[in-house]
Length: 115
Image 1 (cartoon, rainbow, N blue to C red):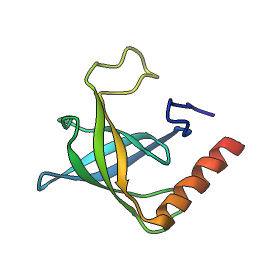
Image 2 (image 1 turned 90 degrees about the vertical axis):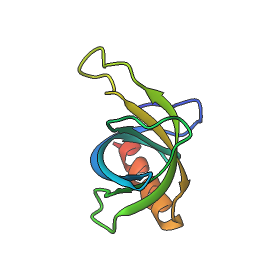
Image 3 (image 1 turned 180 degrees about the vertical axis):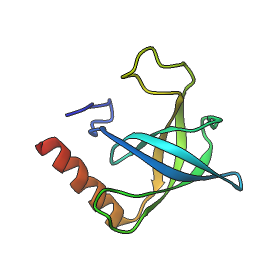
Image 4 (image 1 turned 60 degrees about the horizontal axis):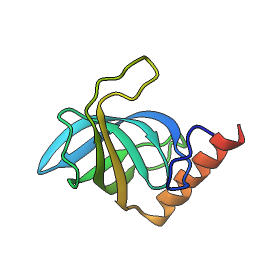
């Protein structure tokens, strides 16, 4: 297991570029890890806590892209202390995710845990 946050949901490493729609502007971000509840996102500039955005990304199953609605729950604006630390960015909590996408995320996380 990579990380078990206070939420009780397993967070696994997953690095994938994504498209972010925030305030009518489209940007490219980098997902650094994910769970069933959300993702950690490297994005510049970092949105403020409480910001609502749309996230578009692929999973390794090669199926259709995931389109999720999310809210910024916390911000990390400290530069990484070493090569294994998270880059500056923010934690996002999914607020809108299709049931099929939840199943796909769950399967990916379960496969990671089984390895």
